Length: 167
Image (cartoon, rainbow, N blue to C red; front, side, top):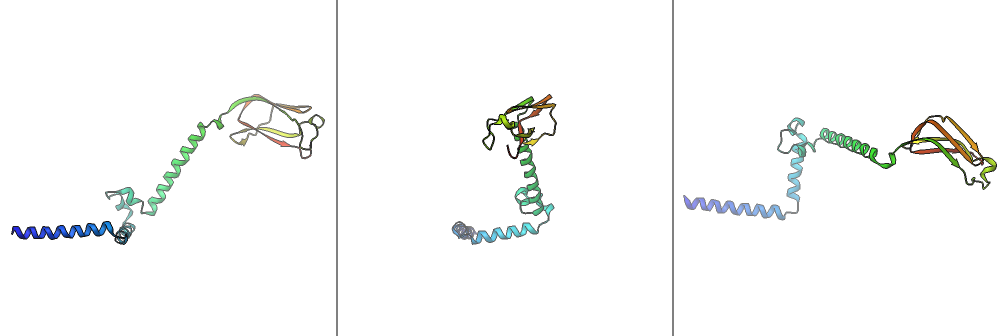
């Protein structure tokens, strides 16, 4: 009986070696067939069974509804991270300003600005790249300078201008 067990072990060992060599040196077709079979089995399995596997994330990645869920969660994480990051960037730093003085050095047509004013029809504050709709307390043009005043102050980090068509 002992020789019979040794013979079976030798045959078993030889078969394992052949399978190991076949799997490690194969061109990939055998492995591809196994992966296709696994993918097919996962696609036919119910969504509830995904959570009961030994690797639920890998199994869930094969299901369309979980892929959509993962995509929505990733989008939410990206959105909240980007919005939190944008609040810390120095470009969004705002301060309260009370006045702006704009002085034109030259007009587009080459005329000196003192003859025709600074060439600005409207001016207003911007906050994070968007115009703030708030009328100034007063504005005044003196020669080439335009002064705009907000008596209560205005939170802003930029200005917008509308220039005249033919200065």
